[in-house]
Length: 409
Image (cartoon, rainbow, N blue to C red; front, side):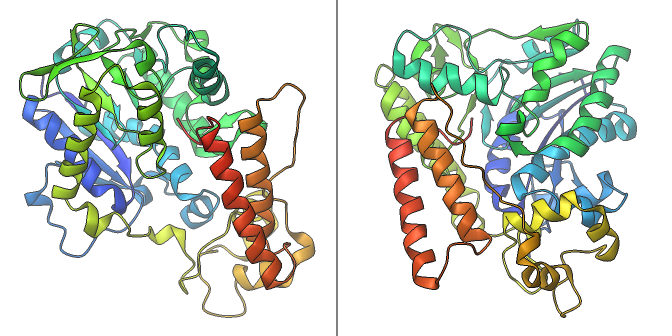
C-alpha cells in the first residue's frame, strides 16, 4: 500500500482493546498505512502512544469545535462515536493529504487483501460493502437478515473507503454534514446513525462501487451464504476466496454468539475464529478497559445521563442557551436539576407503536424500549413498580432475542 493510504476507527476508551487488535492486523499486512484513532473520550491512565499501533489520535473536540458540549450531550455514546466519522474523514483529507481513506469499525480484523481494496478505490470515489450479497432462503434468515437490512440500511458502515477526488470529497462533505446534525438511532424517523444515509449514496454520487465479494465484511448476518474453510494458521477462505476482513459485531450484547450458533453450523472454523478474537482482545486489555465508562456517559457528578435528558435538550434551543454545558451537575443551577424539577416537560423516550404485519420479535423489542423509557424518565410509579418494570423489560428483551431479534447490525 502507498503511504498516502490512511485508516481510521472511532471509539471510546472501553473499545481500546478491540481497536488495538484491528490496528495490529493492518500494520502486520502493511506497516506504512497511517492509522488514526478517533476518540470521543479521555485516554486511560498510563496510555502511551509510542507503544501503541496507532500513529495519531484525533479527539472529538478537535472535530466539532462549535458548541461542543451542547452537541455532544445531544448524542448517546454510540451515536457520538458514529457522528464524528464524517468530520474525521474530512479532517484526515485536509490535515494529512491522504489520497485514500478507509474506515473500519473497531470490532473488525483485517486478514489480507488490503491492496485489492486500494485497487478498487483507485477507480472509484466511494467503496461500500452491503450487509448481504445473496438472498436468504429461509423465513428465519429473511427475518434476521433481509428485514434487518431494510430497517438498518443496505450497506454496513463498519467499512467505507473514500478517495480524495472531487466526487469523493463531495460525498465526504455531504456525509459529514448529515452526521453532525442527524446521526441518531431513531428507527421510527428512518434513521440508524450513519448507515441509512448511505442508502442514498449511489443515487447522489458517481463512481460508487459496491464490493460484493463474499470475503469482505464477513459477519453473522451474512454467513448463511458464506462458508469458511482453511485454518487460522494456513489462511481462512470464504466461499473459496481468501478472507479480507471479518466483522465481530455483537460481542458486547451477546448477539454475536447467538447468531453464530444459529447460522454458523456449516462453518466450524468460525467458532475457532471467535475464540481467537476473544483471546486477542483479552491480550490487549479487555478485562481492564472493557468496562470503563465514557466521560460523556455521565454528568459531572457521576450520575448516568438517561436518554430523556438528551432528547429534551437536543430539541430545546432555549435550554441549550440557558445551560451551555449540560454535563455540569454540581449545583442546583444546572440542566440536570432543572430537568428533574420539571417532569411535565419530559419527552417520551420511546413510542408504543404496533403496526399490523410487523414481525413479533420487532414488536417485543419496541415494547421493551417503551417500558424502559418509562423507567428512565421516572414514569414507572413507585420504586417497587419501577423495579418490577425493569424485570419485565429484561424478559421482553430475552423473548425478543430468543425469537430472532437483533438489536444492532
